[in-house]
Each structure stands twice: as C-alpha cells, then as structure tokens.
Image (cartoon, rainbow, N blue to C red):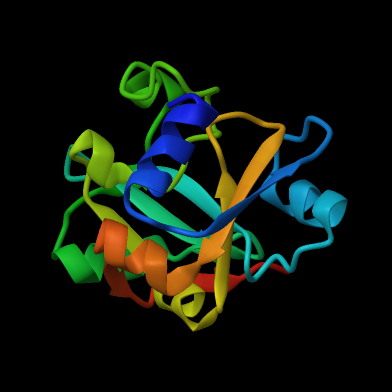
Length: 156
C-alpha cells in the first residue's frame, strides 16, 4: 500500500492524521528514538500464523508477543511468527516489514494488544521504512475494528 493510498483511505473516512518522515530505519524501537515518540505509542505490525492461518498482531514497539496467550485465546495447537516468504506477496506495494496495521484492507484478522488501546494516539509504518502515520487510536479502532486481548509483554 503506497503511502498515498493509505492517505486516501484515511481522507475518505474523514480521519485526521499526521505523516512523519524519518531516516530509513527497520525496527520500531529505532523509529521511536528517531521520531521521539514513545515505544508504547508506536505500533509494530507482526504477522503470525495460528494453526496455519495468517493473522496480524499489532502491539506497542516496546513489547513482545506472548505466544502462549495467542495459543490460549485461539485454543490453538501451533502459533508462530510468519516467515516473510509467507506474507510478502499479500502486501505487494509495501516494503517487507513495513505494513500498516490495516489487515482489514487485505481480509486479514487484526489483533491489537490491550496495552495499545490505552494510548491516545497510535503511530505506525506507512508501507515503507521512512514514514509513519500518527492518528487517534479511537479512529484507528473504528476503522479496523480489531480484536483486542492481552498478549503483549514488556521487552527487557
């Protein structure tokens, strides 16, 4: 999803947002440092396979996924990170690892870590490794209608 397509989608829905440019960075923690935005407010998008089905996990950059919580939530046998080769073609216009957290646009279920819902704003990759979109979390929730549960734990 090129940045302009994402902007058009947000504009179509009357969403207020800010585009933030930064030097190329590949981790959300590095982007948080570059942009001076809290790692609790910056969302990373992680593709997860749950018993063979692709889902999108959206969690604060400062946290990690508790795979046991995913297993319990889904009553699943296997939960693992998806390999890039398993999802890169799903997001053909995005740089690998820079997908915005709008799985609903690709018919992929979105699961947001409960901790992220406590933030006023959410910031996320805009399809590349040099731009963020920042918007009100409530607007994001209204557009995406993600499933929310507690599956993130604080990184050390």
